[in-house]
Length: 293
Image 1 (tube, one colour):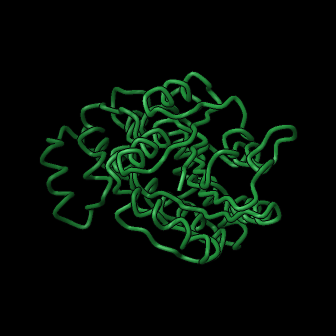
Image 2 (spheres, one colour; image 1 turned 30 degrees about the horizontal axis):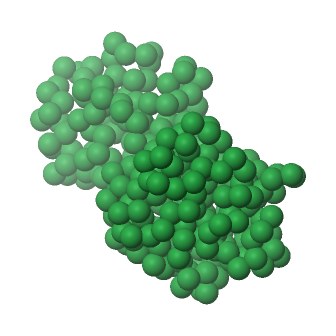
């Protein structure tokens, strides 16, 4: 199976490197920022076509890792140049966190063009992309999942088919909603601890041994204390993903006040020019003496 990638930022590039390491034939890489694609193509020894149509033409499987709904629709539906120009017989594996309806739409247009489409939503970050330990939640037709399985198994240590198109995106939205709420809550707890003059290392240790424990305590707690916000999952993406969850809540007729408050915090970061910090940067709004009130 030959593979091409569309969207080779931090996640996409490391996924491409992983597949190359695992012996897959990489045909091409494409990115909206052409120098990024050209640099990765030189590193991996593959092509960097100027068009989406060329990127899809010479491959069996196209993995897409783009930023949002608009970008996903553009690569499949943009007039004049898109991935469906010669899509018959191809497999598209779409890894971005998108609105569930967009994944359903992409499956529909891909199948109309004679291709298969699978959503493969990722609940992991950059190091896991590089070492092949992603958690992948997949939605789509069983035959698409079966065909994609060799690629998925090379990228992930935990691969699950959770239902038809759109289902994996729903699950991923809920994962990120809860993660973002936990992250904002941890920032408030540690920020208040700092304001009270408590030893934050001691506080984090006690959090970890009690009901205040969470995965983000492990991944983000020390970074919040030390103001180390090197980006693994950006505040801008946290705001976007919280918005997807809130929209699902509205469709279901639910009030989600914690998700709404969390999105407001990440929106504040974006408005303050901090959107490219890691999600741990929400602590900048809560710790005394930093950017918050």
